[in-house]
Length: 185
Image (cartoon, rainbow, N blue to C red; front, side):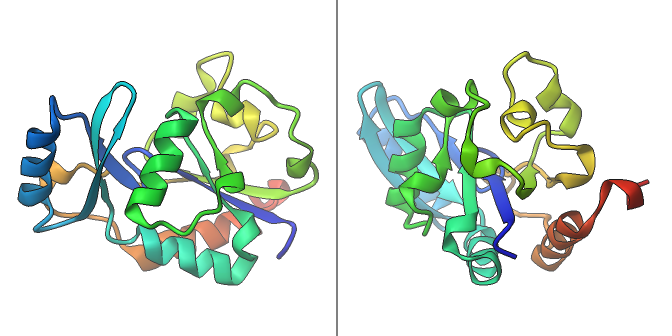
């Protein structure tokens, strides 16, 4: 399966990030939501951030890194590269920095690494949301067809529960990798 690439959306799919007004508020949110979700705070040039990781994020990443290899599991985000890479590091998610594609990358569609690859995108936003703008994740992924897209529920720490079933998500991703255009209905 070395011809497969899995792309995981970052915000509201793998993590939920909040923007506190100051470090004291960041600490307060870590204490409050940290009872339910693993989290980390960090500071960038524009202020403090607190990111919390969804319970199944690490399981999905490890499962597909074992199945596809570590080089074939990526993050694709509208967040800035600095933010996504810092948050991934602070949360201890095992995604190599060269496998993180962010806002700055999405405007280019010439990524030779993607040529002739079987790609799947997992995202909390619906497929049609991604094709509305001239520059979007679907175009970035070489006009990814709908049968190579897996929608998951949005992740928000305020709900305190994650309604997603990790086994169902894994099954949906594997089905998407196996879907061929002629068999998709």
